[in-house]
Amino acid sequence: MGPFDFSTGTTNPETFPTEELAAAAARTVRKHAVELNTYPGSLGHEGLRRLMAQREFDREGVRLDPERIALTNGSMQAVTLVAEALCEGRDDVVVMEEYCYSGTISAYQGLGIELVGVPVDGRGMRTDALQSALEGLRDEGRSPRFIYVLATYQNPTGSVMPRERRLELLRIARAHRCIVVEDNCYADVHYEGEKVPALYALDDGPRQVYLCSLSKIFAPGVRLGYLTASSAELFERIVERRHDAGPNTLAAAISAEYLGDRLWEHVETANRALKAKRDAMLLALESELGNTCSWSHPPGGLFIWVRLPDGSDVERIEAAAAEREVSFSRGTLFHVHGGGGPYIRLAFGFSRIPDIHEGIARLARSIEETGREPA
Ligand SMILES: Cc1ncc(COP(=O)(O)O)c(C=O)c1O
Image 1 (cartoon, rainbow, N blue to C red):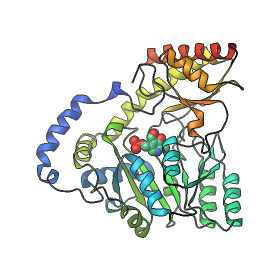
Image 2: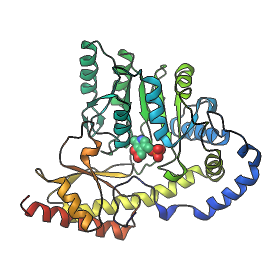
Image 3: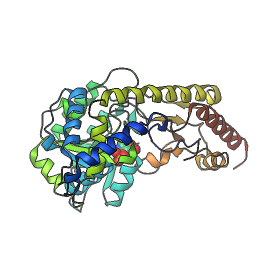
């Protein structure tokens, strides 16, 4: 990745604990030599499952049984496993935010699932529109296999769904007897403001599936995520779909060894540095693009969602920015049907602060130049 690569939601190499992790890796290999010579089973390394149960308890106040947590190859494996388990291979519909994580959109489209997009606003998925979407499907004699939702630090918009709207979403899902799959990939990448409870922590019903990850608080390279479900039957149905002989024990055991007694200290250090990067990008946007564009002020997560001037040609801006070694993600990638307005998504986790300033100045020149030239 180059210094002005704002395209991917990576963590911050500057706070990566290289030496401590190397020491944890050496201890782990010695400690777990026997376990490393066996298959992990479908749930994976128990130490990391216990640690993730503790993480959820500390954040949500909910006690998860580690035997009801399955480690996955990043949360992305959980995103696809859930769909493979809950879809039937014909007339499959999933309801999701109209602007949503591009990886999920392409995975689900690749599985032949019809996606119904629900409009979002600054507070996440609009529940009035969710209600209409579910009623529309019911009138056609159909029901979605599940609702997929990013309630916290939504990717790409950065919004957080307030508690009242979460309760309304859960009420609507219950009324339609619909499973809710909550992807909380950015949980704990928190900078300021209230921490709103996860959906699963607000609902006692049997139709909740919860996905989380170590990618955004630790490192995407460890490829560790996890899933749980509110009923044993639902959990087993999903885990049964797994045919990979289980998650990587070495990565899980090293991560558990390193994070075991310093999870929250690690998260706090990482978030402090990421917040400084977010603030640097907000400041750079204000000084370079304050007169022409508008953008989100995300209280957590790794992205700023920028609205370019109406009529902008995003592809030409992308090409002009690439000539200046700047990259970003086009907003259309995050739209369920590849449409939407003139948006781009900027990731701020990877670049150094001086490069954020320089990269946004280069981006601004690309936008201005493209706006002046005839298409
Ligand atoms: C909402 C969401 N879910 C899942 C993922 C996949 O993350 P990973 O597989 O690294 O946990 C991402 C990555 O950007 C994401 O934004």
